[in-house]
Image 1 (cartoon, helix red, strand yellow):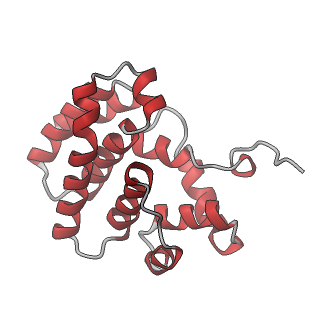
Image 2 (cartoon, one colour; image 1 turned 180 degrees about the vertical axis):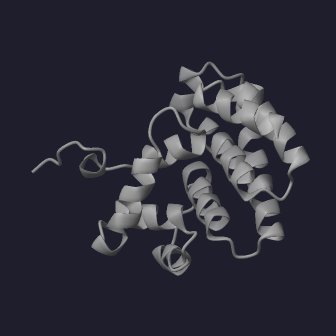
Length: 170
């Protein structure tokens, strides 16, 4: 439990490499923890954003290892929890961002029916603006305030102005 608290603290301070190590240690103690696995996978996912990695002065070796490790964590998560929508949604999104493999909306629609599918519903709302997913997206963005985990900040980065309290153009 000590490693978890340390990882979360380092993550909230955007100490990326130290947070990754903390999460890795915490996950070695709690390998079946869904939240830890998703937080670490999202941390590695955001490292694949060149702007983020440059702003945080991340070593190229760490950045190069981030995508394969994120995929590994997500695949392990699906092996432990087959069908868990958050692992699927993050994997689809990561593959879209890194490999240019488009997410098929029907895959997100299928995932969105699961109450745990926070990220899938958020992506659907951002992409389509469908009101059916607005309240879920609003709750996700409200919970993902700055200073939280990389996963929450990553989710927050998709917030349209209308959900961040800003005004929409037009």
